[in-house]
Image 1 (tube, one colour):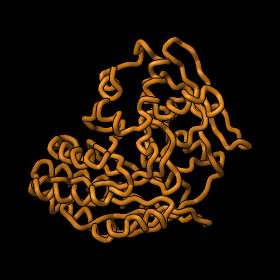
Image 2 (cartoon, rainbow, N blue to C red; image 1 turned 45 degrees about the horizontal axis):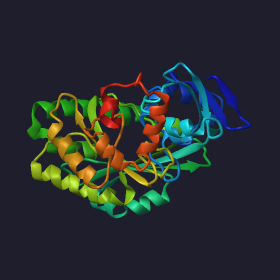
Image 3 (cartoon, rainbow, N blue to C red; image 1 turned 135 degrees about the vertical axis):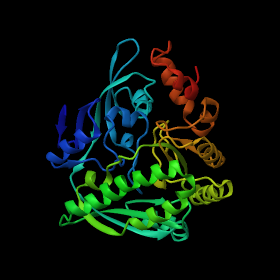
Image 4 (cartoon, helix red, strand yellow; image 1 turned 180 degrees about the vertical axis):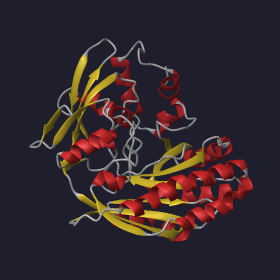
Length: 363
């Protein structure tokens, strides 16, 4: 932690700080980010560079909480950036893909630590999709997981609470988060990889294994959870109004092609923001993420999923698998040219270029 300014409601951290370190340090000082994703292993610079997000009705991705950053450009210049200083660079660099320079420090807006009550419960696919808009509007943070080959979903609603804290008991948390969500689920995925015909049955068992629960705790302990089962992931950001139609198409595609998918599909939301290459740039957004267990053939599933998502104007998560290129992305992001103009100015010789950036941003 480089600096805490309680009066301004900001903290400044070195770019290599992990989200785990940041969250724990903030909590020790009675502070919190407003929203965050569901894992804490990334560095803050990596998380914001790729547009890492959680789910929220009013609060957006981690990058949307940035109020300042320090950037070393291709010629060695150190730029201090904010809405008032080097504003054009600041606007673009909040989701910069590593293309504009090396981010060395980030200043986040924070607030006094608060409590969230999490309510997790099963719902049917039909009930969730029919009431999706209402569930998003009624909850500060709503997300759900649908288990392919079943009609079952697990929903999670996080809302601010006056308390008192009522965290998960150690034994109960271990059974749900470690034994079921990681240990038993990992073993089930391994079986499904070895014997694909078992996947639908495993999916039904997995959907039934997670029961309803409610708990109240500090934000990072509610937003995040351990992820020990390894997988490949593709996630697309869609206009929020397209989410349920795309999800129904995804379900039909899995059934029609007789794919065997052992991992649930995750659905989250974010409000529109003003960051040129944020996946929520300029539009209220829903995220649909698909996963496949490590070592399981994934191309047929991911390719078919991508066709559905791009038909709805989807934007791929910058840090996850996708096949889109600059020609597609320039059409998906109205402010794409604004970002590339900043890149041309800061790094004309492509000191920070690589194969991925050449594909998604062009030469």
